[in-house]
Image: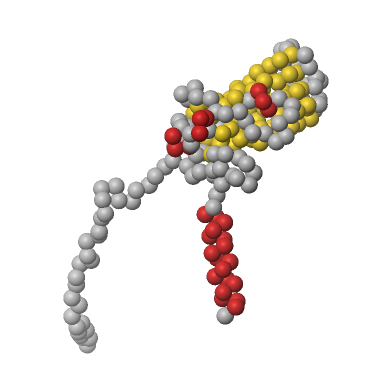
Length: 197
């Protein structure tokens, strides 16, 4: 009896964990990731900085981590050049297709990140919805992310674009409920087999 109770309890806990996602369903973006490069000052040199960015999803609010409803973005910045790169997360700006700017990014720690030559930096940024709006009242079909970097003494800006992947909905009954007709009714009588000699 105790074993059965443990199994049932485990199933309910598993269903609760699966059903309590921190992300809103149906908000997936492409490309994932998108790559942005700072062009080199000399044509024969490789790009000194490469950034890879993904929209992870649209988050519900998280009171424990003090994150309001927001767009979650992850970024990886690779410094492949000889100069030190300084990336200030406060320079990040997110806007939608209606040019509506989101609130400044929540990044922890919020201090500028110094990336040495041949090193990388990884961060997660949360962009709260502007003016107390939410995902169901904001156009989220296209997103644009911009930021600035300092490469040695040079300032450079980058931007990337994301498009929402349409959610496919399959309706098995597009014209209303369809009940198949009943199967044909056959009557099977007795079978008599004659053997001839």
